Structures are given as C-alpha cells and as structure tokens.
Image (cartoon, rainbow, N blue to C red; front, side, top):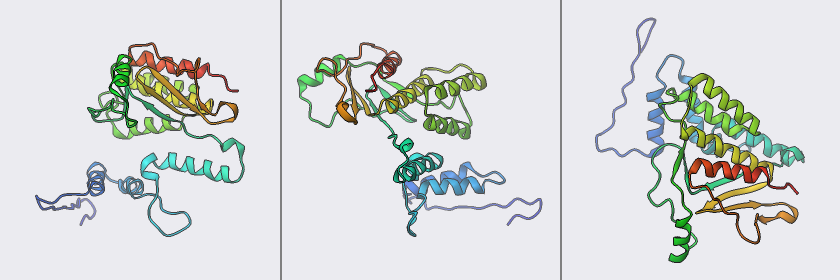
Length: 257
C-alpha cells in the first residue's frame, strides 16, 4: 500500500498454462498501458468501452459502445434520439465502405481478402482479377504518431468529421504537427472523404469488386445501385491512391436528385 512518498505495487499472477479470454487480455493491457499517476479515469473509460454503456432503459450492463468508441457512440445516440423526435436534420445514415483494395486498421490483411461470399464462377473471378490493383493499408502508423492517445484522437476526429472541409483541416494540422505523411495516412484521409461524400449524396454503401464500383442509394427514384449505361461504373486507375481519388470524384459529381 502506497503512502506519502512510498509507491504502491500490485502483482497479478497467472498460471503459465492459463488461457485468457480476449476481454480479460484487453483489460490487462489497459492496466499495463495506464499505470501513471491519475490514470484511474482512463482505466474506467477503457472498461466502459470494453463492457458497453449498458441498457439505457434497464439494469443490463451491455451495449454497442465497444464497436464505435465512447464519443462516437454518444453522437450516434443523440442522432437516434433526435430522429425519434422527428428532427429531419438527424436523418443522415452512416455510409458503409467495402473497398477490396484497401485494408483499414492495424495488423496484416487476410490472405483471402479477394474471396467473395456470393459464389462467383471461375470465369467471373478471372474477370475481376483483371481489374485488381495493389493493396493499400489505411491507418496512422506508430512511426508517424508515436503516442497512442494522439493516434486515437485523430481516428476519433476523422470518424466525427461531417464535411470534406473538416478532413482538410485535420490534414493540415497533421502536416503542421507531425510533418509529411505517407500513403497509409493519405489513404485514411481519402476513405474518410469517400464516406462523407457518400453520406452527402445519400449513398448507403460504397463497394468495389475488381474494377467495379457499386454505390447503393436509398431514396425516391434513385433507390438501388448507381448504374452507368445499365452497368456498374468502372474504375480505371491501377494504383490504390489514384483509385480512391477516382471514387471521390465520382461521388462528388453524382447528382443529388
């Protein structure tokens, strides 16, 4: 037990053959990373993210906060409440992205990233393979921003961004504070802009399969996939960043009505 100038210690002992559940491992990692003076609040916030915020109308301690983060969860919650109250400004739906040439996040991409669930034939697979481009990873590397808290804060702000101008502001701040960045950060900024422009044009989902671009809309006469001459739009760029910019330009020029 710590008193005055004497530091306290806690020893957590595990049997060498003990197998930890994933949630337990994450909690131990939180204790390992937040061990400085005054870190109790950060540990409590991390625990809140891991176990969920709970049922707002009942006593159950479970929720969906772990998937989106605390602040974004609160924003989505505010939007849902406003939508239930009939506020038309809260009608925006978050667009989904499934780009087969982009791997978002840390770690290594799966070896079978080109495998589709709808049973394409060998002929169709060969056709799609002809339109593939190299894989790019969208993330903030540790070598660019070494402090975990700062990296998480940038991810959070990009997730909360609602206009392309806001993405430009974050990009300018990154250059000013941390210097030039590489393709990984550039890809992250571009997919954020794609998500924003898709939401502005009321596109539910943006997906690529080979060189095919599939944008699903959900309003009025434009309910369904965006087609060009009764075919899915084709991407022509062979490099991933150029292909991302091509998608940005397509969404930017997509008519709203």
